[in-house]
Amino acid sequence: MTSAPAAPPARAYRRLGVEERRAQLLAAALTLFAHRAPDDVSIDEVAAAAGVSRPLVYRYFPGGRQQLYEAALGSAAEQLTLCFSEPEAGPPTERVGRVLDRYLGFVDQHDAGFSALLRGGSVAETSRTTAIVDGVRRSAAEQILLHLGRGSGPELTPAGPRLRMMVRTWIAAVEAASLIWLDEQKQPAAADLRGWLVDHLMALLAATAASDEETAVVVTDLLNQETADGPAGRLATLIIPVAGRAAHLLPPG
Image (tube, rainbow, N blue to C red):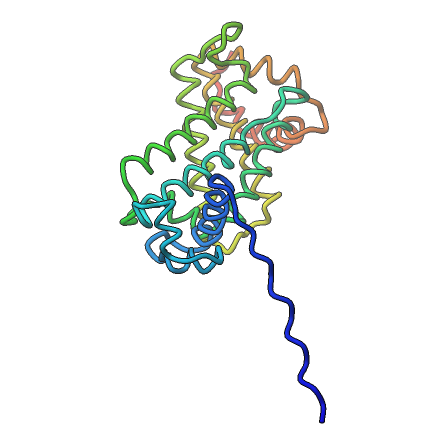
């Protein structure tokens, strides 16, 4: 008679500290919210994902799913804001390219949750969640302005209204393009989308510089930091022949 196989050893239970447990619950919630709309995630599912009981989730988040969602959203917002932080070294367009690589990586990892967050319409959407999202947008714009030599620090020149509006318009375009990218099954490839968005920023800067003196100065300073084999040089190679076709539109002289 053969003996029954020995049962696997029970996993040791370790009591977590308050902050460690809260972080564990937020991580579990973020995993669920990353791929599903907040309306479709229940407290029971968060508890199961974290390996804890439903009452324990309520002990840390007595406001239930709404409070948990807002806390998870705040944590995700911190991660997203960090995507836009880049050392001010090297050609500006290459810095922006690295920022976009991180940003698109975040979008890729949080696809459904990212869509639900930015499109709105969720019952979990409140003035607090809207403020969190707007805070990320404003922080992103401030970071891009720093790479354009403008900022609010004591040794920096504040951006004027036209330049600030242009950068915020570009941030909105990046956001919209990200949502369309998800709708299009993440096509084109993320690297191609990143390159196109950098080109978009350069095109907006050039168009704004044509009628705004401050932006013209910014563009001159930016181009002086660029290289022939970088994003700005590549775009110039592509655009200058196209622009030449508009020569007949110029006044004679």
